[in-house]
Amino acid sequence: MQLQQLSELMQDAAKDAVRYAAEQHQITLDNSLASLVQVDTILSELHQHELAQQHSPEMIFTLCSIFGAYIGEVFIAHSGGQWQQNNVDSKAPFIYVQHHDKEFPFASTCYYKITQDNSVSLKNYVKQAMANAMQ
Image (cartoon, rainbow, N blue to C red; front, side, top):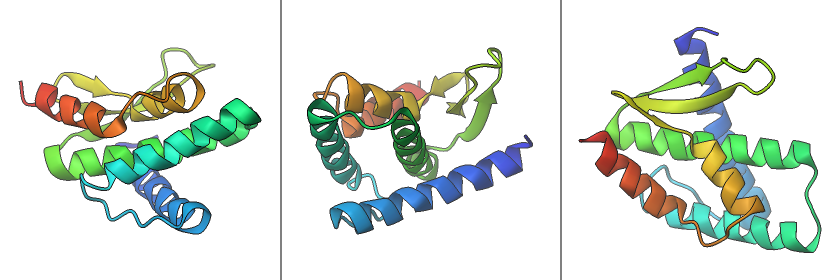
C-alpha cells in the first residue's frame, strides 16, 4: 500500500472513531490533545465491558484500529510523523506512526488497555510519545 493510501485509510478510520464515540458513547472527539481524556473514558468503558462479557476478536480489532487511527492522527497533527505499515510477519502486519526514528503503535496500546490493563492512559502515552519524538 502506498503511503498516501495508508494515510487516507487512517484518516477515514479516525473519522470512524469520532462517529463511534458520538453514536455509542455520546462523546464528541474534536481532534485535540484534550480529547484523549475522552478516548481514555471510552476505552475504560470497553475494558469494563470486556471483563463482563468479552467482545468478539473482530470487534476488538476494529475498535483498536479506529481509536489507534484517531490517536495517531492527533499525534501527527501536533507533532508530525507519518503512517507506516510493518509487513515483516505477513500473518500479523501492523500499522504505526513513525516520527524520525521512533515508532508509535497506538492501536496496540488501545488493545492492551481494553483487554489487559485499564490503568494505561492513552493521554499520558501520547504525551510521553510526543516527548520521545522530540529527542
